[in-house]
Length: 84
Image (cartoon, rainbow, N blue to C red; front, side, top):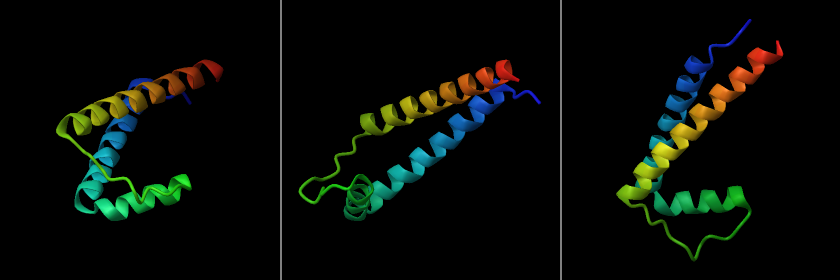
């Protein structure tokens, strides 16, 4: 069964955008908890740092992650289709 690389890329890109929006909302609403959670996931102490989320950072991250994930998923599907 071949995969539709465009559809998979779009689905992955939309999923990444939804996760980016949810994560950004959590960071904006609960910055201290988000910093602690990030420290736990990276095995680091981020207690002396703070979040600095600007509109430019939010939008550029949204665009870059969405495009990156979409392109990666499309390429992965295209490679898979050539291998089967």
